[in-house]
Length: 126
Image 1 (cartoon, rainbow, N blue to C red):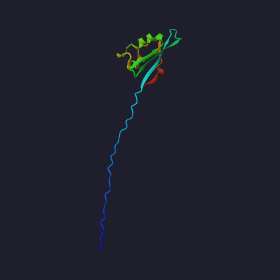
Image 2: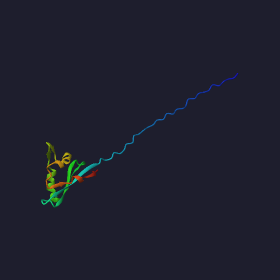
Image 3: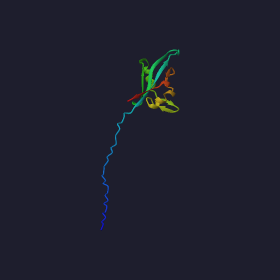
Image 4: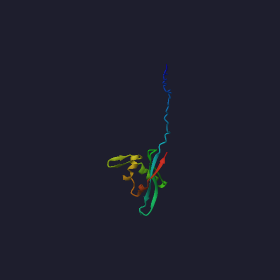
């Protein structure tokens, strides 16, 4: 008599693996603010001599208008910077971003002054 052996079927062994995924937090970089500056010149009455008064600009970090000028022109520049103006019925308060953005369209700049808007300087502030 022949006996046949029964084949044993083995189940594959399964190991449970627990995977832990951690999100890597990238360090936040400090914001980079911009400072916009234009040079301001004053033309003499004879129109043959141009004097560099200084600069007027806007600081995103400080959210205000900034300026630097020769001491002889300090009062004139302060008067312009601290003055609000209207364009088409819209008032632009002094020392604000809107004031700065629309300054070239305003009438508060004295006629003897020239702003070098084509050569605006943009600086990074941290």
